[in-house]
Length: 221
Ligand code: DC
View 1: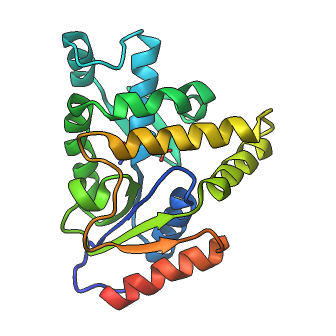
View 2: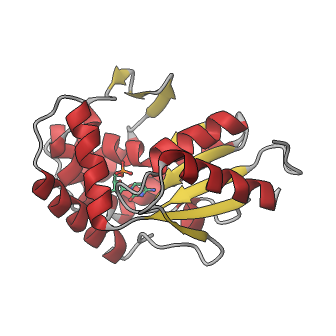
């Protein structure tokens, strides 16, 4: 798919479990563009902070740790300072700790440049504030959503398929709690950009979601 812009920026925002990651990854593959999972970066920061017992409040300790933070991606793996943290950042502990760290302005500021620096060859980026803050001039902006119950079911199945013992009720509570913190925070809250296409995936399967996003990319090119 050729764009007027040789390095198109496609952004996909939405709440936890809306299907952003899998859809964005597939759209990136079909469009031969790099894929950026910005949630993984917030999770990696959270892992480092919780390991070092630095609480989710603005402090000189936290800012110092942010200055030394270095994340990279290689073959679907997430590396922090050379350590492969791909599995560690998906643990239930990180799930429940990530939103408070993500709400801190110091954390968000320090990650802005890291995210933008990934876009030199164009990209498909997914997160919460891609269309509103990180890439306000993106070529295509999509906001994916789905009912909390459907999103919790997707997360439940994902976890169960990895062999984890999980409770649907716990996951639903966690999804609701993260939605609340992510959308109520003062800086870069979860919300659709004014020029985003809002797409409710409650009744859609994976292929329908991907095709709908690709249609939008075709329409805008
Ligand atoms: O997409 P995810 O579940 O991996 O994201 C984990 C957390 O990171 C999410 O609860 C909010 C935060 N996040 C954010 O604040 N901004 C982003 N662009 C991406 C994620």
